[in-house]
Length: 190
Image (cartoon, rainbow, N blue to C red):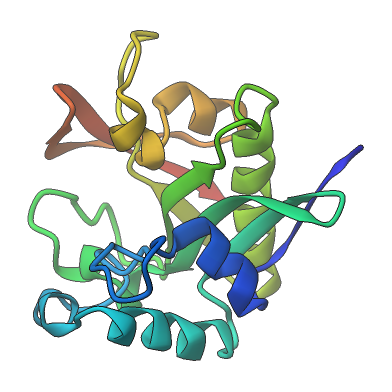
C-alpha cells in the first residue's frame, strides 16, 4: 500500500507518534524546539499533551503524519523558524534574513522503518511549508558520512536524507549530536 503524508491535524494520531505510554509521563511530545525552553521545562505530564492538542488545532499544524493504509506510521515536525527555539539558538546559525521554516524531527514507528517513509515525511514537510508560503525550508541533520546513527538520536535526520530531498548545505553549525556534527541544510522553494 502507498504511504500517504498529510498535515498533522488528528490529535490521536499525533499522540500515537509522540505521546507516552502513560499519559502522566514527561516525554518530549516534540516540544523541545517548538516552544520556549522555560515553558518546555515547566510543562509536566498531561500538560504537554494538552498543549500539543492545541497546536494540532492551529493553522498551520505542527507537522505532518505518514499513513500506511489507515495506520499512522510517521511524523515530521515543521514550522516557521521564527516561532521555534531555533530563532535564538546560538549553535544553529542564521544564514540570512529569509523567513525560513525548520524541520527538526522525523520519526518512523518500529516495524515500518527501512521503507523510505522518512523521505516521504520530509517531502510532506516541505509541501506543508510551501502551501503556507514558506520561501525556504531548513533542517539541521547530522553529517554522519554514512556511519550508523543511534536510533534515539536519528530524529534529526542525516545529511544524505536532506540531500536526497533537494536540500543543499548552507552552513556548518556548532551543534554535535551522537558524536556527529550537525549541518544546516536548506531548500529554496521559490
